[in-house]
Length: 292
Length: 288
Image (tube, rainbow over all chains, first blue to last red; front, top):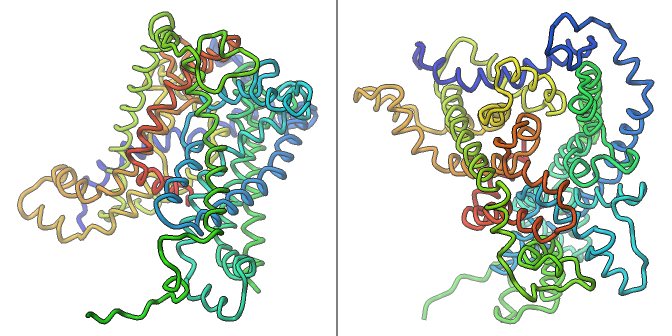
């Protein structure tokens, strides 16, 4: 290998961008979170004062932040198992069928994962519409009254979550299908020879062998739910009455609607710490699991 | 008569290959229903986009348009500014391809050169993969503002132009290119840039294809940065234009579905043509 300027020239455009928009912002966020920075800073930097941990103290006294934290926790606790179980189930079924037909079906499950969230939300908003939405029409056929999919505080959580689950399974199905390719056929055949039925084989051979994929999907899905933003933003804008406001929505509103940059940065650092802790705990649990 | 090897899976040999078991038919049925239910919102979107306004509000709803019309697509591109939004979106995607080139170059340097600071820089690459966008959202906006790039298309594309994960993927793939080939090219007098463009890039075609498709999809669909950075309506991308339509015209589902179709159909076409690369890419990017 050669020593010259060449590698630096190759690496610098990308690294410059990565450091500017990946590393510097973290430091900036940490610094801003200790100031009272808001829109007036654009007029003059003299309007920015150091306030220590005031933003953090204010944050933990803010009922809206606690509501957003609670919502995010609820979404994660219900949403992670929903996505993991559903995508694992579909992947196991898809893996059983061979041939063109089953391969074509895979594509359908994958479409929601690649289409734009804004377009998706318009379509779902139309389906959910109280007066002329298809869902309420179908329910009216079986005698159910108009359902307030997006304006009922309890139901709106479900409606928004459903779209996220619908959108989130596609990618994980692909990951599980890839992992299923790695399950050795002889293991399954050995189990058949021992007289194991299909259910037994699935639960005693296949699923234990998918342990890493399941762990991986659980960790990434948890992180995704903790950062939950798109669906509530476009479907309900965090409403009604904050019922679908996740921490990310809260941060966006504080930062870009109310221009409280310091306050929102403090919130983003808290979210970052929560995500890091949850991920570390999951990694720990896995290590404990491997000790067996 | 030739001697056939013993069938490896005796149970399959016993059955005639053309008649599937009832179990397989049931499986196919369940999965087909699930697939239709999953894709249904898109069928509904396309169907409604051709319905006259009254029909899309009708109760009971019609499944297929009874009086198909193209007026909403016309309206999008004449009365509304969707032609411009489309152009802006295409420009953002094209800027994304410049970023792709940067990432390929960086991946190549990490894979094939030994230089001071390589380990530290590569650590930076890996570290950025773990940082959520919400943390960087406000500082990035302030940085763009400081660079006077807010309200520009470049500013929209810049925050996501380079991702640690893509650099990582390029690096992983490019380490498999034999170093002798590069040495041979240099002995033949090819410059470094030429070696990269004429030897390294063509040999990286599989990973390049995956990344091109992913770059297209993420640029086309990007929503957060256009929303934050573009305040002038002239700079809206399709996604922002569509979100605006959501607030303005909640009473005309046909127009909304037509606009959503403009955004979704190109991605579906890309998906159908490049399915293999899309799935490969997503399976890989899921593994980050």
